[in-house]
Amino acid sequence: MSDFSQSNVQNLLLRALAPEAFDLLRGMMQLVELPVKFELIAPDVPSETAYFLESGLGSVVASNSDDEAVEVGHIGYEGMAGAHVFLKVDQTPNRTFMQVEGHGISVRVSALLSMAQQVPSANDLLLRYVHCCELQLAHSALANARYNLTERLARWLLMCHDRLRDDDLPLTHEFLSLMLGVRRAGVTNEIHILEGVHAIKATRGNIRILDRRKLEHMAGGSYGMPEREYEQHKGFPIRRS
Image: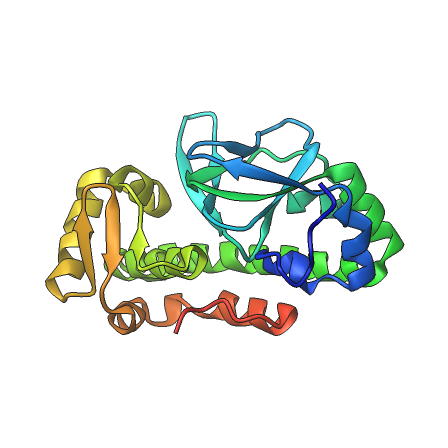
């Protein structure tokens, strides 16, 4: 497809590109549906396609030989799956897949790297996005080490709320346990705590945000810095008001 307009795409990275960089990619873009569990990046396989999400939620998961797994990053309309290719590596042991269905724009990695080579400002922009992803990971480690489970759950829900742009978050207890690295029973207890202060309303397979300010208060300093860093480098707000 070649009828994409930079002013109309929803993905913030594509909107932030220099116009000449977007024009180089325009003819290579494909609109794709991204159902739940769709694998955006397979682990330990050379990545041939990058995905710029327009809606939905992607989950970056780290796992090891003991079959332990935990989510280490979120991707929504602010980002892309496959950013590791800008670090001159063609594959990663992490897996990225869709936790909430949506759609996006796929681009061949070869075309993306060619564009970045031709337009240095675009390469710089995308490397700054990698920096933001690393900062998100660093603050996840900080949250896991220094904040309690209630605070960490509030943080993750805020991050999902930012990326899904809806008050209804179709998140299962299984996904929340993966996000937090705890058993499902522990997640259920924490959800009850957030419901008790009327910050959220949980039903089967869905969490509705009732009071974002309460979630922000409960998350405290565990939430906000990576989001501010993204806004500084990309020029678009990501945090919901």
